[in-house]
Every structure is written in structure tokens, then in C-alpha cells.
Amino acid sequence: AQSVSQHNHHVILSEAASLELGCNYSYGGTVNLFWYVQYPGQHLQLLLKYFSGDPLVKGIKGFEAEFIKSKFSFNLRKPSVQWSDTAEYFCAVNGADKLIFGTGTRLQVFP
Amino acid sequence: DADVTQTPRNRITKTGKRIMLECSQTKGHDRMYWYRQDPGLGLRLIYYSFDVKDINKGEISDGYSVSRQAQAKFSLSLESAIPNQTALYFCATSDLGSGSWNEQFFGPGTRLTVL
Image 1 (cartoon, rainbow over the protein chains, first blue to last red):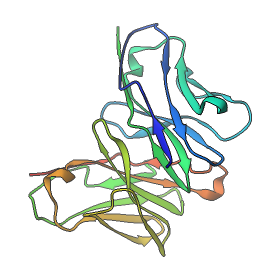
Image 2 (image 1 turned 180 degrees about the vertical axis):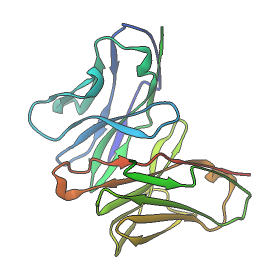
Image 3 (image 1 turned 45 degrees about the horizontal axis):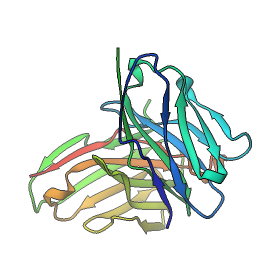
């Protein structure tokens, strides 16, 4: 069955710390991978996406993610977080014309 | 200039009442989706529609029904609301033909509370 696992449920960081959020997926076909962000009280917005080509994908607001096919992973990274990055982050993978979402990681950044 | 709108944004209702949540989009996308979001569970797909004549159940369709009135409109109904349907509901759209396969665009959400 298709699935997405986000192992970090709640991450707390200080400003300027580095961030890495894990995402592992299970899907037998060609994958398209996404990271969405949900700021407090807002709807989901696309951070970045991978369809093909360079496995290192750069998104908005300094985020990047690396697709490692052998590890079925698509981890999200940011070298230096800001207070404004406080949000919930969702990894998603395409599956038979639908998106399958992970359960999300809540990130809290303290000044 | 919201491309995907949802009404109402907040709703409190009582057990047994019929509720309709509406979604409209101006993106011209063929595909529309309804999700619910619960803390710790992420987003779960309720129903999706690839065009006006195509409706499909998602992973948690029990207790819900949908209507695709037009390409731009996709409504979600709770025929007889129950408390465990209290959640945040999102509508989303996508366009297969855009080259951004399965990238979805979300509405602002409807917070539904069933007492």
C-alpha cells in the first residue's frame, strides 16, 4: 500500500539552527514528491516539488529537499531557520492520481 | 484574489443536522478534492472528482457525499453530522494538463464543529 511517513512529529528549534525533517514513502511507481507548509491559521501552500531530474530541489524561503531513491526518502532541509518558519510541514507523494500525505511535522522556532 | 474559495469558513452545528460545505475555483482546473485534517493524522482524502461526470471515493468517504455542480464547483455534504466529523476541511484543485502533475492548490479551509 502507498504510504508516507514523517517520523518527526514535533520539532523545536532556536532561530539560526539548521533544520532537517524526515520523509519516507512507499510507492512502487514513478514518484512525484511534494512538501507543503501550513502556517498557523492558514491553508496549505507548496514549498517545493520533485518530478524528475536533479534530485536536489530548491523551494521557496530557502528550503530544499533531496530525493534519495535508494532510501525512498525526500527530506526537507533549511540551513538557518527563522521564527517565521513556525508552521506545520507535510510531505506528500503521488499515488494513482491522488496525493498521499504524511501526518505532518509541527515546527516551532523560538527567537 | 483567492483562486480556491470555501464557504463557510467556520460552522458550528448539532448532531444530526445536514451540512453542506462549498468550494469554488477560478483556476480552470478539472480536478477537485475534499480533505479533512485532524491533529496528528494529517490530511485524509474524502472524495475527489476528475471532471463533472467523474466522482470517486477517497479513503474516508463514509458519512459524506459530494456534488460536482460545474467544473468550478464541488460541494461536500454531511447528511447527518456526528461529533467525530469535527475537523478542518480543505478543498483542493489540480490540473493534469499543466505539466505540474498532481500539484494541488488548496482553499483556506472550513472549520466545522459538531456538538
